[in-house]
View: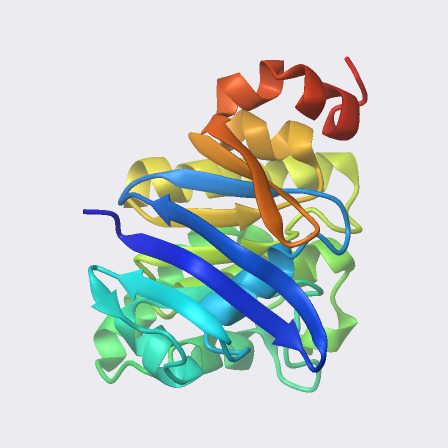
Length: 238
């Protein structure tokens, strides 16, 4: 059984239909990527899964349980955590306070402190800036904080929306190394939305190509990397 199954999903923004009946699945322990151009429906998909957008039609199943249109806080408590596009950190709060906000569903203080130590080891720069206001961090540091805050909720399934956006190449590599480490060493299942198809397909096990709200292609990362259509549209034809 898949950890996450999306079945015939339709989502709209007012009168505009953004998703036209997409279906895909994510197995436990996988990194699965959704690639596609701006406006293809990638972020909409994550927002629907995490309870931030209402679903018009179709189902979202998590561990076989229908979670379609559950509230965002219920979904976090189930173990699905969203790292949004644009980071969306709490700028007036310190790094430590942002991390504490990520643990809002948890009660055990000792375990929360263990998670805090884990993310500080994962991102040493955040430890150095623990008492600094989130809004004063660099773009790369804010992305690290957004990922670390999500990890404070102890996710089984991490939804990541454009983690490389606006980052220098060396920071992109660092973020993607963390993604692989979380999957390989911590067993976190990851659904990754990413415009940098090169990077996404270098870390993912499988992928789906979205175009104008529909899934056009699917396959292993290697199959998509070598697909002429994907190479032409998303990999610069190399």
